[in-house]
Every structure is written in C-alpha cells, then in structure tokens.
Length: 148
Image (cartoon, one colour):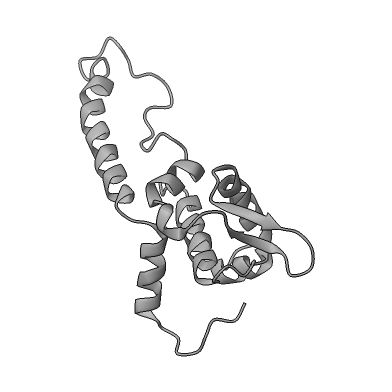
C-alpha cells in the first residue's frame, strides 16, 4: 500500500512559496502547480500554518506566504507536521499469542523498523525547503519565468 502524498505535496507547496520571493500565492495557483484541488491545498496550508511554516495574507493580492525562511524549514519538520507519526503499519488485529511467530513478531520487527525510521528522519533532517528550491532552479526545465 502506498504512503500518503501529503508530505510530497507539502514540500511542493513550500517550495513554490520559497521561489515566489515573498509574493503571496493563492491556493488556486498552488493547486494548479500541484495539479490538485484548492481544497486539498487549503487543508495542507492549515497544517503548515499550525506548524509555523506558512501564514496567510488576507484581502486583494493576498494568499499564502512562508512564515519563516526556507533555509530554516527542514524536510523532517514538514514530514512531522503533515504525516501520521507511525511510518510503518502493523497488524490491524493483534497476532495470535499462542503461535511461535505470532507471539514474537512485533517484538522481532520493532528494532528494525525503529532503525529504518531513524534513517529516514536523519536524511530528511539534512535537507531544507531552500535546498529543494535550489534543486528546482538548477533543474530549470523552463526557460521562461513561472507565471502564477
């Protein structure tokens, strides 16, 4: 089963805000970039705002903006703000305690899953939204400026 797309979409949104040079962006424009609905974007912006990464400017010309520097937003912080804290799903119902495997499987898996989660978190902690924005600029598939 695939994981949620919230993290990737949240990084996309934050990166778009980072390259907008402080110009507020409407949820409709962010949704266009992501290719999703503005409702999805507004839900993510709410979570990102609660985490202190974005803020909203009301009125004409308003929209979402970064609330802190892109270089100060680690991908780990974004992940923790928008994703379920449990990286790995385990059994929906407890395994059979009377079975040699069922009675021990959760304890046997926990150390490996913990190390895997730790490795993921270490890697995400090394990268900021500014790093992603820099990579987007380096890749530069378009020779014309982005139009919002």
